[in-house]
Amino acid sequence: MNKNKVNGTDAVMDRAHPRTGLNARETQAFGRLIKLPIALAEKACAASVDNLNQLLADTMTLRDLYKKHHWQVSGPTFNLLHLLFDKHFQEQSVLVDMVAERIQTLGGVGIAMAADVAETTIVPRAPRGREGVRAQLARLLHAHEIVLEETRAMARNADEIGDEGTNDLLVSNIIRTNELQVWFASQHLVQDPVEGNNSK
View 1 (cartoon, rainbow, N blue to C red):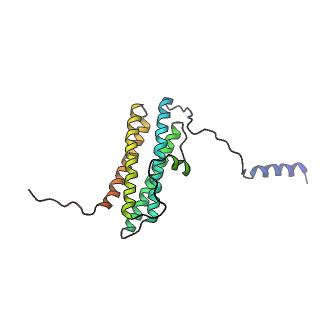
View 2: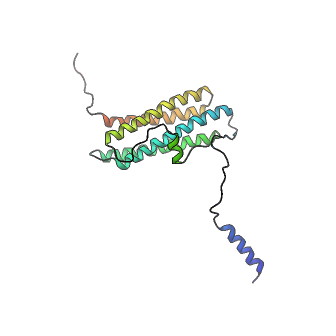
């Protein structure tokens, strides 16, 4: 047998094996920006990336609250809320992806790991155990309020610094989706629908 052919085959096979256990290094440090040709000042990009990373952490936390409550909800409205919570989880997942991609578009690095999210979010941490339905809903609504309050401030800031892309994302996607979810979730806390008042 040709020794060179065997050695060549071995070399090809060696290259085909997955390389695991490599000592990887960061190619872009968190908090550092790369300049992309998007006709937006680096200072504006940096400001938006900082804001969006906070929003990303809070949106990921809200998303995960919905999944937690989807799994743990109980009681007579179980099926309805089980489905609603999962629907809202899916919608928040879309927002997470949009925010993360906007950060990358601006030349930044989005946070991604659960430990980093937990350190960054300003949404209060939920207990590990199960809560009652009203407490679950109240917790979700409080998280939405936090996200909406910061998003409105971030949208104004993005507008002031000329970052129309971020402003559009915040207004058209984040605010509108969260407002709609607040409406749907809050109606499950209404005990008695408001009746018409016939008094003159």
